[in-house]
Length: 73
Image 1 (tube, one colour):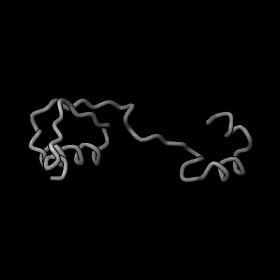
Image 2: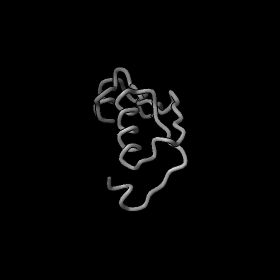
Image 3: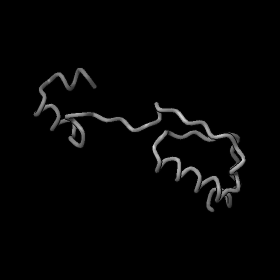
Image 4: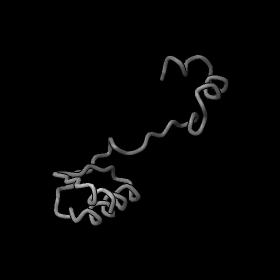
């Protein structure tokens, strides 16, 4: 793996509770032969969900919801 080839070593790993994040982390740790390090998971690392603004640009959000978007962000 590229990380191991460049001499990267890790003491701990952090991930969200999302399955794809956990699987990606384990893939990387296995490739670096670092499956022994502690893994810390926290819900605050999960992706954000913007509700009605999900997938919209700032301009599109402001058109849809008004100038409050600027204050909220």
